[in-house]
Length: 168
Image 1: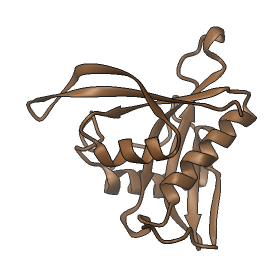
Image 2: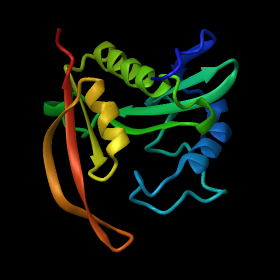
Image 3: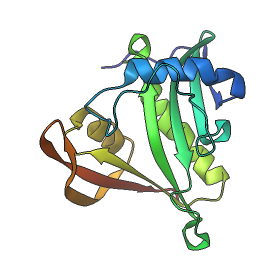
């Protein structure tokens, strides 16, 4: 059972001034369980042309950045504009077990609704059982599997496609 979400928790859009803290969080939370790329280097900026502050919601607990979620359109196509995709979720180790990941997912779904989306999708590695359980608990269902999509540390790993409708 997780602890209740701390009362002093705020979920807000990222700001350019969050970059250094987000980059450090990204390095601390990197894991072979969810990553398909090598760990981020110390000198690599967090924000770039495809990863801008408006794409991120951050969780701040008592003034301390605790986690983030990235929400973006999955493609630039007008025919796909009704969908948003979660493309990253991280919660710092000191803040885990408090419901922050679930709160970030719910905030992302609310933001997607605000943007006019009717569904949210994501991709998760097949061997990442904790993330899959989290997403399932948040109402996401498996919509497809790309078997052996990634070769990670000498093993083929499935890419699991999940989605959640936003219409009530």
